[in-house]
Image: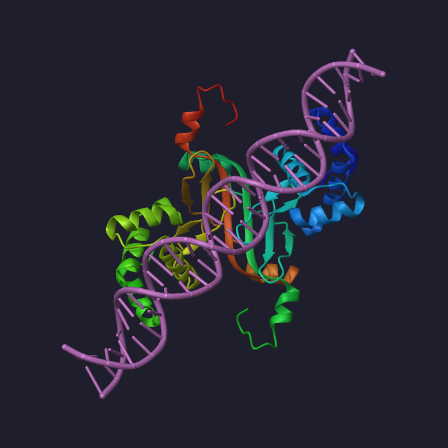
Length: 149
Length: 149
DNA sequence: CATATAATTAGGAACCGTTCCTGATTAAAT
DNA sequence: ATTTAATCAGGAACGGTTCCTAATTATATG
């Protein structure tokens, strides 16, 4: 995750304006990075810092950030999309119970050159996710007679 | 991918009824397995076999099949969800140009025991995807001056 | 084969996170 | 201070998916 100054600098260099709303959103992203927050949570947190932030501004800013590769957008169908600042290749462990997302560092990347040779496919970005239950949810579901949570 | 008979058998065993609509949907899934078709495509193909298939029946049947682990539902946000019969652990190479999904067999699985020991997370199912451009789209985008497609 | 019953079907309404659209506002450069 | 291009807020629109209901149908049983 970049720090606030480097993001502001990147914004200026791209010709993007530094607005109080964007500052608030960026701060939320950094403070809540471990939570992999969704647009809704970012909106609620950003409004605590500055009341005049609209949901469309949050979406616009998150779109700008992810389009420029400053953050990564994790897209889901059943669950709202989430955002993360950790751009290193890693596995996301996603809890089906509470939605928590845990970063797990592990060397599971494919060799792009080998993939291209075998299939002609040019890899750009990856999505490595395992779904299951986090420690807390496993404990919570135990004792309820739920053998296979 | 199971064959038609084994799916029909599994249906009977679960107490699910064998209807012409379901037969049509299952046949489409087997014939178009390599396409990783979405609900819309399955609906259109199934109607060719039997006119009296509704979209809601397609969704209901696909839901039944994936809930029972007979097929796997690949969920997306921007793209319609897709379904696949290949239940072996593999990587899906997903083309941003045309939506094609290529199955790539590679040993990229994590060790569930090690993950559980380090994080307490109980892994259930995985999602290993790489996004990029397939051979055809790379060729198509070349010559358009599009250096980085 | 007739009947009872539980399950499935068709069609449309509802859902909801996300995107799009507009006029009003604001930051940045000169 | 002025100009101009970009951003903001609010709400409408979107679209794949899910939910809902009455009508239909498959299956088991005698």
